[in-house]
Length: 325
Image 1 (cartoon, helix red, strand yellow):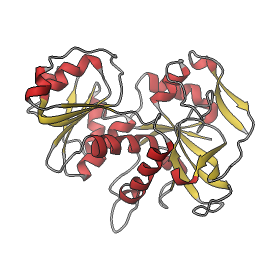
Image 2 (cartoon, one colour; image 1 turned 135 degrees about the vertical axis):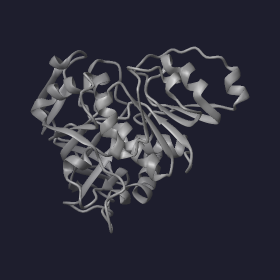
Image 3 (cartoon, helix red, strand yellow; image 1 turned 45 degrees about the vertical axis):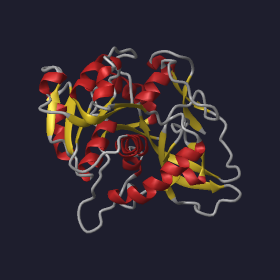
């Protein structure tokens, strides 16, 4: 089978497309013919040598999310048939023609969605749902601040938060991205290239979904409301920050870290069950428009993977970049 392979740690020049051995489905597993795979910033970090795949996943084949067809079912599998369209989140290896996953970690692709749409769902919607609902405990009527709202996770989080009845504040360093984000549930957009965050917030917020990290930590604690929660998903701005701890005590604030890739199989399977019940149906049309929509900026053939990396590194995309495999 063909796969995208990192031949070393470095720039886009280390990316290659190679023939590699095809995996075999074992007990409780399915082999998927991958049709589309989303590109994520974790793929960039892994290419540079800073984000290794967790144990049990390919070390040199990137890709955290896939959409495709069940090609083979392993022993003991009864929930899937050959030809079923499935999508899911994995620890690596999705940017290849074939991959093997546990049957309990796959989700049925909603009928109305194409493979490229489905390939844009798992990583960002899993992450956003977990951050908002499981970790952040977002409630109707609360105010949530979502950083990088024009990103894949940002556009997913805005839609979910609006569905939950929250007021959504989104940030970006691009006024054009803020304008494009408005139809996805963003009530207030803040261009942080023009105005400091702390000066732009009209009042306390109950929940912050953060990908900046250390440099924004003090500002985040300053704008959180009583019992506010800060969920940190990324450290794009830096790993270190300095705060005054009395703010945590007096306003009973919470700082919560979350990463999806390193979670064990049981935790992933439990999340898949919850998403199958509560999230996936929201992509169906029903009697009107779907509540949730994957936001796909561009689709690339796998041969143009280096170009896609460049677009993401330059922050040129709004929503997801997806590879056709």
